[in-house]
Image (cartoon, rainbow, N blue to C red; front, side, top):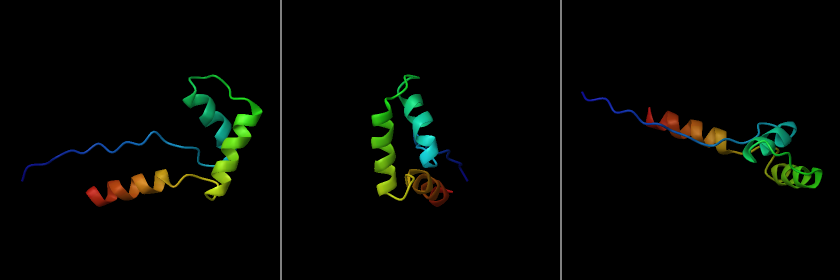
Length: 66
């Protein structure tokens, strides 16, 4: 049987609301966002339950490919 490798990637997202500022700084190449930008992003994460579903979705996709 021939084996095939599949690489599953996702850029990521903050795990908690406390992770929003470091995550935002990282994706901006180390430039810190303003407090207003951080709060706006936190509010968007609050509206979807405090964290992105991206990690769980990507893990489920990887499990489905295994």
